[in-house]
Amino acid sequence: MSITIKSKSELAIMREAGKITANAIWYAGERLKAGMSTLDVDKLIGSYYAKHGCKSCFKGLYGFPANACISVNDEVIHGIPKSNRRLEEGDIVSIDTGASYKGFNGDSCWTFPVGKISDEAKALLEVTEQSLYEGIAQAQVGSRVGDISHAVEVYCASRGYGIVRNYCGHGIGREVHESPEIPNWGRAGHGARLVAGMTICIEPMINAKGDDVKVMKDGWTVKTVSGSLSAHFEHAIAITPDGPVILTQP
Ligand code: MG
Ligand code: MG
Image (tube, rainbow, N blue to C red; front, side):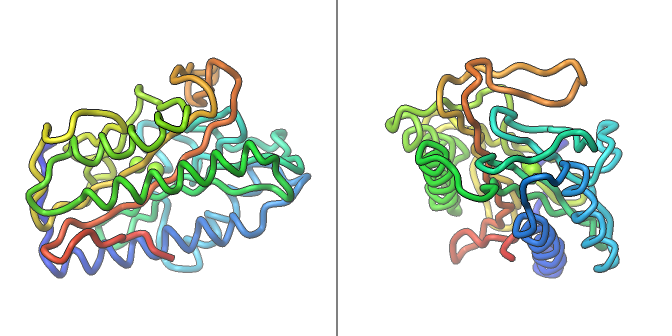
């Protein structure tokens, strides 16, 4: 899949898709509480989309069975919502989803606390979220993908966190996953040149300890090898002459 450039009217649709996506994530994220199952969380996302006349673009993507990936604690990404996976006070929960709207897609992820969380968890969430903004700041016309990657890597690695290297961000548009890949590590000044009208997802997946991850027996859920907590923050953004514009703003 090649890099696609969006027109002004296409960007306006993507802004709508992004807004619905972000609002669905926050609708569910603000309702998390101990005792809920991850399938309950998925149902909140599904009902939000239905109310807004759209569908999840995750459902069926590569055979994924749900509206959202719900990943808890040491689960990094691609957690399958389950009726017997109950949330507990102190958990951190990543909600990753996208709305399919008028032929275009949103894609965003946010990691939420369940009740009161440890200082270690709080620090991980703060660093991961800020690393996303460090990456977004580099998403300028004329810069390169490696400038984004390097900014995320330096911010997290210098604070002692692990960077997930097996998965990365991506272009987005009519397809959920388009070119180019946006890794969370790399060399500044290298990679594809960013041009106006490109839309990309930047999505740091950061572990409290160690880079390594493994896929569970369900074939989807990815966990940290160390057993440490992991956080995931993602925005879809547009590259514009006026700087990066976040499409997945609630
Ligand atoms: Mg995502
Ligand atoms: Mg993504």
